[in-house]
Every structure is written in structure tokens, then in C-alpha cells.
Amino acid sequence: MANDGRPWREAPHGLDLAVRLTPRGGRDAIEGVETLSDGRHVLKARVRAVPEGGKANAALARLVAAACGVAATQVSLSSGATARVKSLQIEGDAAALAASLARALGA
Image (tube, rainbow, N blue to C red):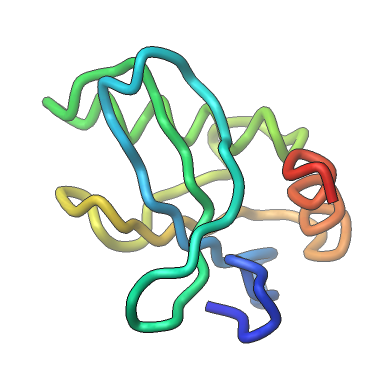
């Protein structure tokens, strides 16, 4: 998404976030930022949930919400429901959300 190594970009509603999700990953965790072969930066995340019936996507929304300090209802899937690389929308103050994500990544 962003060219500066961040997997998010500011939007009118808050942030748009690109995520590469690994379902059935053994634990729920944000593991850093990865650069895809096309040059896009994505947040690497894994969840214990299985990719059936939207369970992994719901677990991802809860994980990202916790990292951002917002309610899970403020995180929604905008694309990639069945893909490994997904786009999420996070509602709220963009600067505060970005700062929370940066802290979660240890930056």
C-alpha cells in the first residue's frame, strides 16, 4: 500500500491496511511487515482459526483491533475474503491508529 515500507495508508475513515494472513498458524500474532514480489508491503499475521466460514477473517479482525486499541466492529474486511492477502479498513483517527500499529510492530 504505502511506498515507505508501511502496509497501511491513511483514508477518510481511518486506515486501509494490507495483510498477509496465515490461518491455522498455531497462535494469534502479528509478525511484522513483509514485502511481496510485486513490491507491496503487507502486515504478516497468523491466527489459530481455520479458514472456513469466515472464522480466520473474524480472528484477524479481532487481532488487528486489539493491536490498534479499537473495537473489533471498527475493523472490516474490504477485499480478499478467500485470498491470503487481504485489505482491511480500520475506523478511527488515522494518526492514532498508525501509531498503535507501529508500536505493535516494535517500531
